Image (cartoon, rainbow, N blue to C red):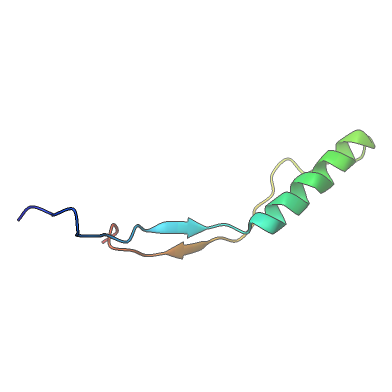
Length: 55
């Protein structure tokens, strides 16, 4: 069946820790300016939010 304009799907998405990402970015920039060691790879936790677009 065709979807009408009124039908809505909830999208699956990833929630990212924006505040923590910003803090790590600023910290890294300060370390670069001060010629200190900078981690090349930083992994932060994310949350998967399942919507109707994922099976």
